[in-house]
Length: 142
Image (cartoon, rainbow, N blue to C red; front, side, top):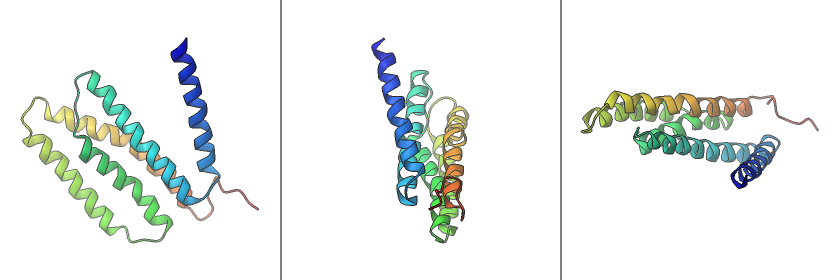
């Protein structure tokens, strides 16, 4: 019962933080959801580790952060070419490191790395694009 109450309290706090981020400035929005994305990916990696599935956490986190920075760069009219090149380098580095790493199932580790990116980082990135649009869905008219 104590775990249930802890989870309910945590959920209420998360909901409050999400609503606060939705109706404030772009900077706070991108900051809060960026932190939530990294925490969520790390939570998934911890859950995978329980099943003895390992991924390269540093490269996966860096790839997810760079992917999340795409709408941030768009929102502030910054050049995204550097991010695209960095994403390509991280993509190739993840393949190279996992294939050269001595261990079993390198393709399984690669698959779970990109699954965590597709499952968590892509939705957070798309949410970031809603904030970077000219007329945001969440913008309150004054």
